[in-house]
Structure formats: structure tokens, C-alpha cells
Length: 161
Ligand SMILES: [Zn+2]
Image (cartoon, rainbow, N blue to C red; front, top):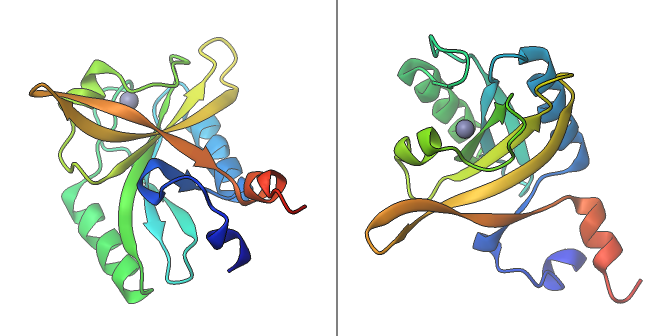
């Protein structure tokens, strides 16, 4: 693939989420407002990352929770399609595009990528999308930002164009 070769950001520090997938995340976040939406991120056999919406089972609107049975079904579906679950996404109806203290407390898989969709608390309009990886610094759990790219952005950054 021509743009894989010129891709200068190390793979584990960036996530390519196509514009259509980002749009789907924004629409889901807006539909769920004022509650949080959630879903999984699947890497498909062709290298695309696909969003799989999940039912938010959390009894409190400002949290998200994916049922274990839903999660198992998603992993099965990903395997059948030759892919894998690489992480998950949820929305922040309070407008903050970074992980919350509750998110830090909920870190379970150190390899999972987290995507957050900020939603304007006044209007319910979806805004920034950010991506994160869990990290541990001096024994304390936290997140570091992951560069979120869309295919369009990579093409624009191509020095030979
Ligand atoms: Zn959160």
C-alpha cells in the first residue's frame, strides 16, 4: 500500500479511523445524548478499523458498560470476519474530549485503544474525537494521547502530492 510506506507515525501511537467511521461515531453520540453511547473498535482483515455500536448497559447515564455476553458475541463476530477487537469508544456528554477519572479507574486491558467523542452539553452536538492508550507512570494508571488520523489526512500529508 503506498501510504503505509510513508506513514511516519509509529503504529501504536496512531489510529486510522476513516471519515465515515468518525461520522458514524458522532451520529451515535448525538443519538444517545444526554446519555453516553459506547461501542467496540474492530480491525478488519483489510486493515480498516470499523466501529461496532454496543448497547450501553450502565444504569447511570454518565457511565458506559458493555455486557460480557455482548462482548463475547463481538469478539466472535470479529474472529469470523478475520479481524480482532482492538479497543472501544464512548461519548462524553459533558463536552470533555479526554478520559475521566472513572475511565482511568475502568482500565482493564493495557493494549486497548480508547476513543472518546465529546458532545456539547448545551446543544447535544458532537464535536472532537480523541484517541488514547492506557499507560502506567510511576505505578499510577493513566492515558497518553494517540494521534487520530483519517485516510484523507494521510493523503494530504503525503509529501509527494
Ligand atoms: Zn469516559
